[in-house]
Image (cartoon, rainbow, N blue to C red; front, side, top):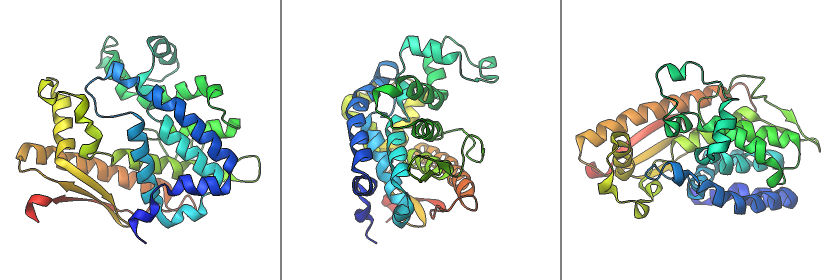
Length: 294
């Protein structure tokens, strides 16, 4: 099937299966577009985490799902779409919410090697947990239809990084919802984790917002260098292809390191889904293709 046939596939199918849930989703998007911009107050030179990134994540989910979309029910599609928009809300939490949410997050031994004064580092490293708590606190603003849907959206959003998708208590395979459908937490969370991981192309930099020459933080410089060199990412049926345009050995080295991390994520997500759920993830590998060598 033509890869372009998956454009807006989930959105179209949700509207067909449940106009009511589709309406709830589209209404939520309006508010979330503004909320997501709050991350710029904390990370003014960080890679994009606005609604544009959320849309990219949805687009990649559509392509990773592929023909399996016919198996997904309306409640699963709604929960995944909402999770895609909510998953980075934790990047822009207010000072008040940061202090409130921090009392509920298990930081482990994090502060043995990190300072509590570096709030932006704490938020960045645990933003999935801050997102989950943000959703829980402000759920009534988004007309979420049930506690089961709310639980699914929270866990899918949290699941875009770090959480253990094989934990049967946190990520049940089939949570029942009113009307007879079930929601498969591991599959939906694996989808958003993979989609978020591969959204690394140059378009995500929003370079028109920043003076890239003014960057001084080494981590930011490395991140923007990688993103600037990756011109496109293709989600094919059996693999993900990163299209690279650079002759800089330093940048290439950092991209190769990133590709190893991405491959680890692919392996983890496939393991969490295949054999445990009715679904599969067909993409098995990360391929780097330097267009300078074509």
